[in-house]
Length: 114
Image 1: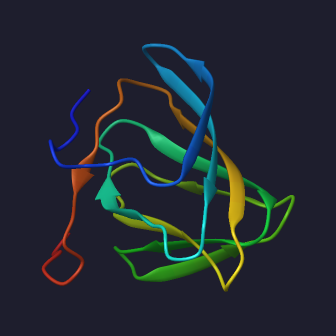
Image 2: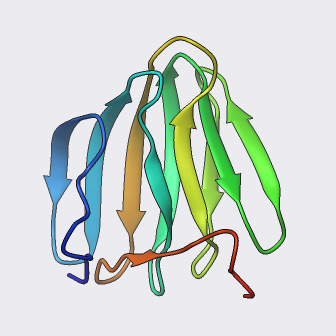
């Protein structure tokens, strides 16, 4: 697992499943909390909104997706993204990461060139 040393997982995390190839967690982010800009080389992030509104911002190309309860979105490999609650309320979502070995690469969106 490749994670930068000073990375702190944002929000409240409830692990549902962990295996060498798939991670499943329920995450709750309060207003102001952020899963910072990053990308994965072998896994996709699939987000299922279960409370509030989840905001996923992406690069390459720039895009913003707002997920309401019951909606989902897949972020493909090598696409930088960050996740935040939208608005002034918390959001809760299930995050499925896989299939493949987990890795995480931080990104500065101001200098990203793809």
